[in-house]
Length: 329
Image (cartoon, rainbow, N blue to C red; front, side, top):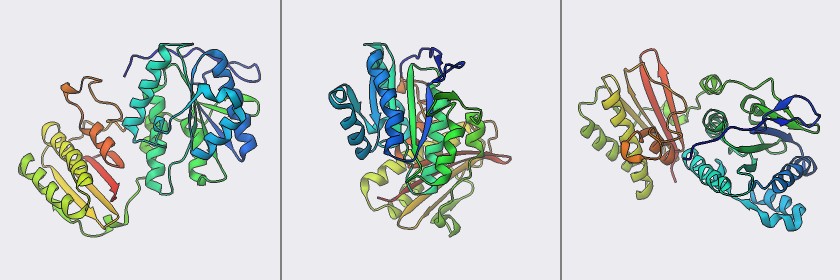
């Protein structure tokens, strides 16, 4: 991903003190409120020469572009700029490509109107909240203005309430304003409850408390994942990523290395743990550990986030656990 520039300060809508509009949230309750936020924001970007994009559901794209009229031709639609159409590493990579394009033309800035939709399950909410927090940690200094819209007509209340915790700026009728409820991204993510799949209350399909060798554990993980996941392509993806997490535990952790796998026909969960206590960055794996040069390694958690639906890095007093979970497709 390219090197990023600093955001210039911007004035609030009521002429107050400068605030950053780098990552803002707007809670809306209808199409009129949505358009009141979206149209001035997008129009300002078009006038400034920004690269302007919509990261929204199809119905919202249609609503906004119909209001923009001829100006809609200059606005791109890309669901893969967020979890709306990608997993986190791929969404950040797509954002990097858009930023490269923005840097080469116009104002050098990227402007995105994004619609929040984390799905119906608490595990998806956690993944979405973590992504919003990660944006502040990983991309807070880039030349980008994003407004994330939270539609209270269809989003669960916990998701709507989270907007204030994960956005340093809120947008309302009076324009953008600094958000006193914004929380430190690291602290916020560590405070999130861990969703637990019902299958984890059953006996695991596979369990080992002191894996002898990495090669042996990889073979065991292959066999149990193949037995639980019907589709060959998903089997291979999940096993590849789980093997990389196992390799991290053997190479960088403290023995013994343990593993558990559960499956119930709809979800598969894999937990790999070791006794190391010196690591536990909750944003590990959102970007490759060593940047764009993948030949340097450091891809285990990044690959896991690309291939599993949910990845949790869970430090504890007796060691580190990495929890992987996915819906079986």
